Image 1 (cartoon, chains in turn blue, brown):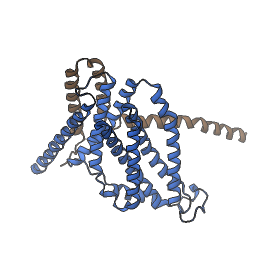
Image 2: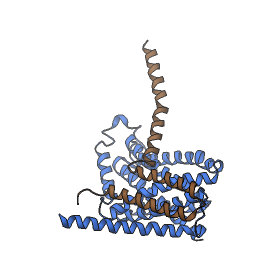
Image 3: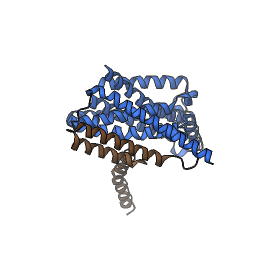
Length: 262
Length: 85
């Protein structure tokens, strides 16, 4: 039961972070280059993702031995989780600028607006288009496609890895679907208030969960018997959380000491 | 002659496509696994090696894995901190 809830939570938070990033890019492309191409880019990316996951992801789970898969996927989660945790700790302690979704959005809009659909007439698709959605635009399409495809690949990787290692595919998919529903409903309703999503806290939670699951599955794949069996994931999460808090405090004190010395 | 050149150019362009995708694929995985924190990739490989060699000695596995993770993560944070206050 506890493990089921933790897997749903891990999948939900990890997928939500990626989806927030994808949504930021799509909104920026839609606002600056027209919604028609942005929506077409999103749909094209989703079709590609479904084809890739169906063609590669599902056979992989049936063909590769489970222990080898656990080690590989655990390793991938560990690398991804630790790098997210590192960024989140550096941001929380003031050693790195906070990731500001509004700033990312504004930068993207500025980049895209510097050559609007009219300025790139040569690259534009046939104009005219659907009423109310604006003309077709290659840049808007490419930006939306790229954003959704790359972030979607990470979501697919998280879903396949968490699902295949834990044998709880349904829970992982449930977490991902919940994340999609929540992020896209909230995004559609309150796209102006993007920056209020505490992204760094989400990133830290995901970093801790992914690193913990990664380490746990590397152990399981190499036949290590964890004390407490499946429940040991809880104390592994506890160790990572405690260590992260210690690091944040240490780095904060280091910064204060440096500032007072200057 | 001109048609021959054109067809040669087209064949060259077509053969360059798989190479381009292969390079992008390798780049994607390199950035994903190594990126600007190669220490985590090495740490993960080390943990797998420790798991394979020490899977029957649980206390040794636990101590070495958590100690190594703590040290590498700490060094990585120290390396990534802002240089100026």
